[in-house]
Image 1 (cartoon, rainbow, N blue to C red):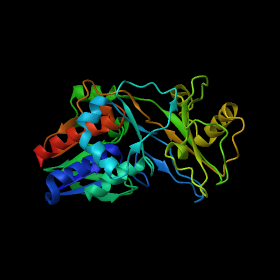
Image 2 (cartoon, one colour):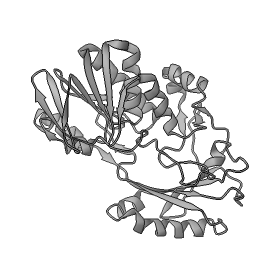
Image 3 (spheres, rainbow, N blue to C red):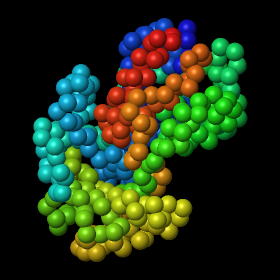
Image 4 (spheres, rainbow, N blue to C red):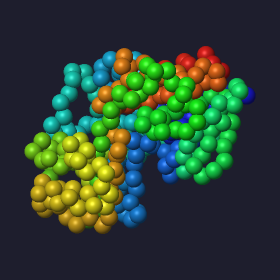
Length: 342
């Protein structure tokens, strides 16, 4: 039985694991490692320490399906809708510019529930706080080293973490990349931003009527969402949540600062935009060093094969484009390589 390691429990990694299981069933052992304490990656949902407050999405906010992708990825959208993981987002998002035929979706249980659905379907052996530091070729296998110590052997490895983290790996990866592959990976550019979630007590009522809006007249904040309202979850006994995303220039300017030092600046700007916002019971700030892909690998190949045997593949939104359907495209293209190899 082949052992396949998928590094990264975000959308690309989780869907790749799910599709591989459906394709090869019990002929493969699928292992997923992630350096974080939970799954989701940039589809991260955070839960407050106080159970009376609603959870909040700190990363991706909603999914927009273009008419073309709604057709080509129809089976996945149908699966998520029938499982209740996705629901149509019927609320108006102020300032959102739409292409004809596009549809928006939200997740009643948070964006990370999409990733959890695919991981559950994959039956993969899932390990968190597993930070990969190096890959070494050992004959027909890969030895994969962890930061905490120790290593394991795999027949195939799929790397789905952000490209700069792939380029930092110790071992044999760097020397196996062709000159062109190295140039392509070096050319990938990500935006950076901060996200803040504010959690409020159960009796809180927001004075504004909108669900979410894009902000154009503030250098710090570009997006605000009444996160619980977005999923029609303003329930009695459960306090609402609010999510704020900073602009990319602000994220870049403050990138090397501690998030504890940046949070007060964001809250001060939020106060200007929403002066009668009540006092939250807790606040969570997240720094997204790798937020969205601004420049992807040319021609959007979906993946990059570093070595055929033992198979080493790089995948993720950097090889397509930075949204739900981009990750789906990457997972589908990676699956075709895995099938041919295994």
